Image 1 (spheres, helix red, strand yellow):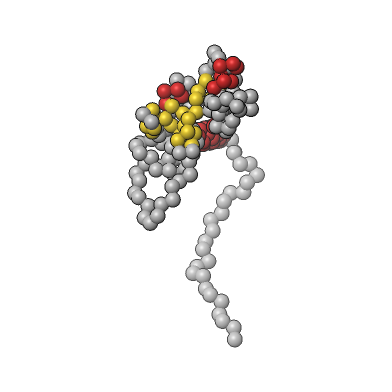
Image 2 (cartoon, rainbow, N blue to C red):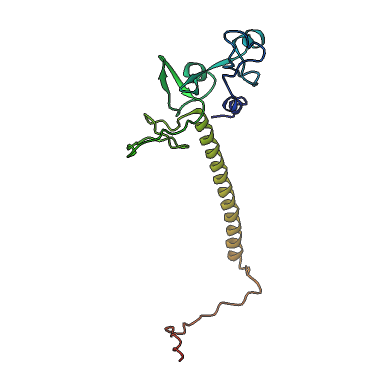
Length: 197
């Protein structure tokens, strides 16, 4: 998932508050997000006045959690690996991680889990929400950077080893002023100190 300037802001935005400018109007809850402006959530009326020709996505609610329609978000973002659900005959995905349900008794055996929060998944998806995918990608990028550093360090060490080998081949003493190693003999089987009375 390439860096998308508005994604973190979308995931951290609070939706469904009343609009300050249109609080008395019927459709005044802030459930829109402008990808062009990368600003706070706004209502239906703000969209028609301030964001008329912008790329806007509408956030919806499912069981008190924010969702977005797959048909809207997949146009602007790679959502592969994220679990989708059908709610009110529309395919949606959750924006952020949701709390785990409290299970009474034995936990069911689940073969597919979110790689970030461990929530059970229906299919072979890797993440339960867009937020978990972002965390996963950040972890992978961090691990990839760490792997690159290890490779660079190994290459650097490899260059030093090659230099030592070439100096040996040329007959140079690679460790001047170092005494030759001496063979050490073992003292024998260790003996316990006698008990004193």
